Length: 99
Image (tube, one colour):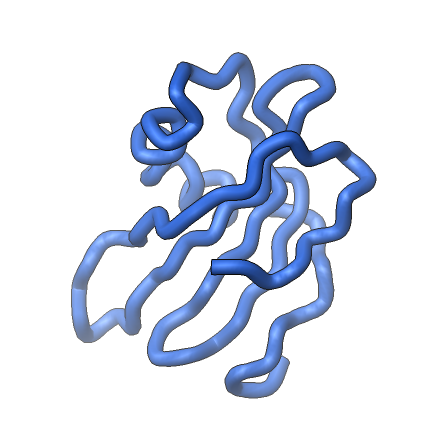
């Protein structure tokens, strides 16, 4: 991945799952209700002055959301920030950049 460029889509791992768990409450608040599931499926990253994470999250058996999370550089010490989400996504929908 080059600085500023969006990575290829990759399967989510435990690190991405842990990341989305830190912002789950904010995501569910924006969604308007608790999610049945909350499983990271795949993701794309973008290195900026920190890292943008675009994550496909399964929230029920057939429904997905795309979440946008910003994680600042380690020296800043801030927690990941839930920025926005796109609802009504399917398993097949590609992760496209959004803010």
